Image (cartoon, rainbow, N blue to C red; front, side, top):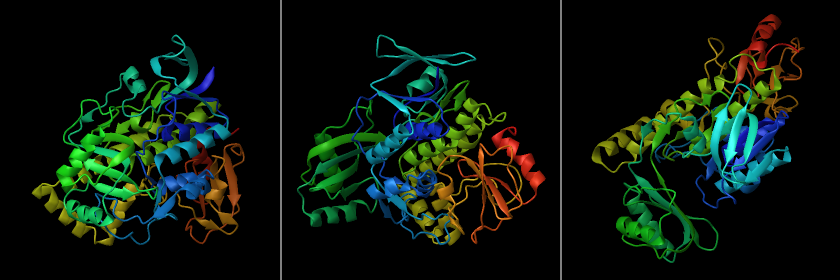
Length: 477
């Protein structure tokens, strides 16, 4: 029997596969599409996702293909400087196209031993107390069995539908056309049009890709398509460009065309027995702020070690359920802030007035920092109960006397960073690495980090540590 089958070979599914393989879990990824998509849905990683890649030793690969950009302007397109003292070592957006992110995470998962099968569509699902039976459309109704199953198969998730999980929210009210194509208009014409149209319409853009005159084109659609899986035609794009800018800029030779809406929905539950949901299968929202891919990758980062612990037999009670408890509110907050951003991007007088007010408020450093932490996911604090201000937060990459914190987390274990040299994790050494070192940036005698980098304990008392270890890492071995 396979340990875990993952439906969906996008960034969420591949991140999850890699996390599971770090713990020796047998993983099979099923991807419906036969070839990777060239469509660029996302163009960047926010600070928390950059941290995630660094924690797993992947950041150099991403930096080689991406480029850091200033962080300001990601909340509803309101341009403000990066707030001072942002709690991260990476106060930027790493610009990298989604196909590159997909490829890097796929390479990582396969290097660790994940099995990937393309052209495999899930059409049936059933489960019992021991495992999950999966039926595929290919191979004459081929059936597979696994101990657990995770749906990372996107906003139209077949897994979510087969489970019968409710997906409440709002349908799309506005749609945007997107594509990469060549333009013949002069740069002066494009600059003038951009300056004028974007005074009120933030869903309009012409971005040079530095690739032989190819541009990324963004323009509001005339209406909402019945089936957004059907791409728009080049003529539709031309018509909408003329509608908003008075010219179609001579667009031609599209590499790809796509459309996206502003539907906002969230699964009522992230787990039903041995089947779980992650990424867009669990939540969809407008792409404003560039949070979607990041949210899915961070779902996988939260779920991977917990599911591995369950399969490994050392998971404490309710550890796997904490995936829903922790991540459902995070996604709900993203849905909330994207709803707000869409209102602020409306061309109507009322929302424009609110936008001006929000812009004024963001001149206050604390407001700017608060909204930036929402977009970058650096402000997340899980509810671990009362205690130290670090408890429940992820710890940034603090510098140690002998290196950096994140360099010590590549293996996906928990970590006790002990500045006292008096503590011990005997009995949990197979799950928690004990590092005796000091950092001028850490105002705490010792911190216990979960594999996802969130602080599970702060203190210096050995008995207090022993009382906390079983909550996250099970009984001593």
